[in-house]
Image 1 (cartoon, helix red, strand yellow):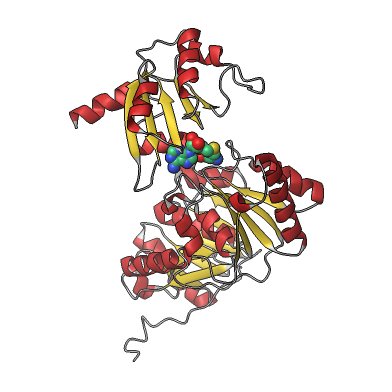
Image 2 (cartoon, protein in one colour; image 1 turned 90 degrees about the vertical axis):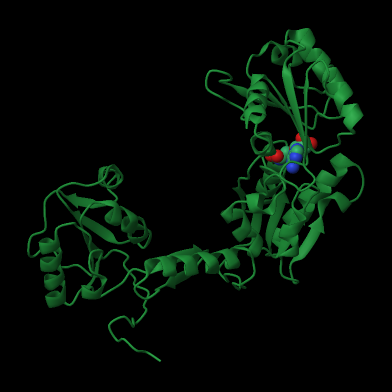
Length: 411
Ligand code: SAH
């Protein structure tokens, strides 16, 4: 039952591309409305004696036209849509009256009932737009919009795939393991995928959300040794993409941090397959961060180095200058270093780093099974053995660990 014709709106999606839209006012409301008007391609004229620095920025880059004065009758000439958002009630009224006379729809931040259009709470997911008008209570529309968008992103509400999507490969960083730590773009790519190629570090729960017709390939099950399986993997993603599929290569952390992601990007390039990257939250900074260890801290560490420990110091293929890392003063973050931590710690000490330097080891960061261990460069190998630490784990070496421990001890 519709009970109030004044608050029962007729929803429509406006095509504003290339069309003049007048925004009266340059404050917070105007600032919030401008980005989506620009996304829609509107030619935005902001009329206001003063504007926020953000709005001024739009004017400087030529994205909007700023007329630095108050409203004058006639300003709405040629406009398709008007946003009235000044704190001058008289000007708002006058502009509103002009809009009415010109039959231009007009939103008003000061008086929704006097407006002829209302701004919905908007969410976008690919080419899908969700717009919610919640009666006179904007918080209601925002909260409904948020819960609908969360469900769409989590796959609880099916948003059938965009038919215009292109075949190709998307290298998606899945984050350190907690499925909440994938990016919004990563989740969207997953939902639009025909094929998902995953590995050990990619969160299982993200795969559980995929619809049944999506082909899931476990990269660790591809045949033969490590080098050969990377070859097979490259071939597989290229072959599926050439067959017209949208392929997501889901990788732990960030695809380009020790993830061999770029080898896959190169394989795509060689085969003429479109490939794009959705960066991820790397374990190198997030796993320490979740354990309360900042990789930099003012006055303590102004540099951090991330190194792979998968080859022991002295290994002929190692490209890491362990002696130089021993001389550094800032934070050293080691990935894939658990198996070689004893010779690594020894090399760092030999290079000059004090055996008293604090070390944190975080296993299974962001997962329910997360474990943290604190030691020093001199004691860490023994501590690892005693505590049966196993990969995946991140090792952080440096004074930031000490600072974090001091904070933890006082709280
Ligand atoms: N591309 C990944 C790193 C791949 S190398 C990223 O950006 O995070 C694999 C190494 O990452 C593991 O050996 C471990 O050192 C680290 N790692 C990844 N996920 C981890 C987690 N949840 N907890 C601890 N270490 C993790």
